[in-house]
Image 1 (cartoon, rainbow, N blue to C red):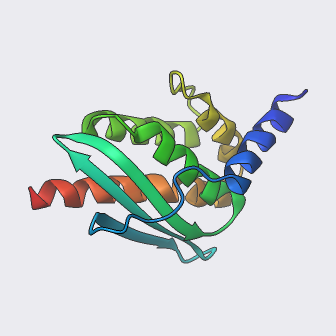
Image 2 (cartoon, rainbow, N blue to C red):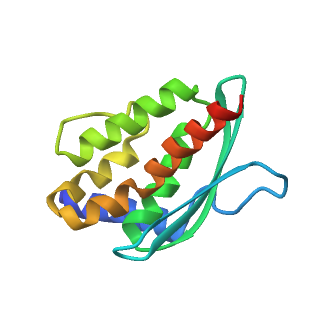
Length: 143
């Protein structure tokens, strides 16, 4: 199986079977971001306790790239410290620039590495990660 096929399967799996989709019923911190060029929209909720991302949930609409990226991002940041989550966001940005980065045990994200060949799609892939950065930023300003 070619790598591209494998990557496409991983992306479609996250798109069709999203992880952590849905919102909390309480007043968890909420960030809304959209990408006006293609209409992708995400609402991200984070529960941060003692500097650790305990939970991450999202709802949104958009293409398979933006929604699968959101699914992957919410999976990988759970249980990470805020610093580690921001480091992952930085690594994801590097991945989108074509740099060779890894995500440790969580290899699904690497399925999005091919996106960097399509500049118009990079915004789709980074939407959830930008929401994560914004959420952490807002969380830290409230404490």
